[in-house]
Length: 88
Image (cartoon, rainbow, N blue to C red):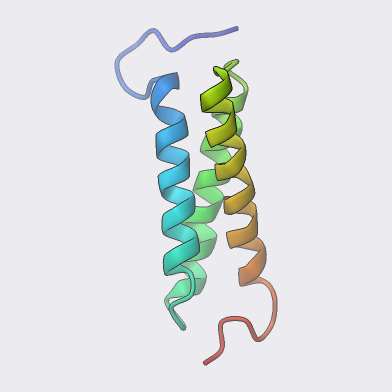
């Protein structure tokens, strides 16, 4: 598999980044009015980074973290499109 050789984003930081974004999107996504763009943007970013991280053959612990980030990011984005969930 391909590896990150250059400085910058490393494959070992993708699980931590993606789970942080997913938790951020899910928890702050419940704020009325402002939560919709937060949930969509950060949830989508969590899905993208988790997907990228899964392509680089992670270890078993990292794979669990990436899959949970992927699921939480998808749930965060999906909840934003259900009518009436964000209306208070």
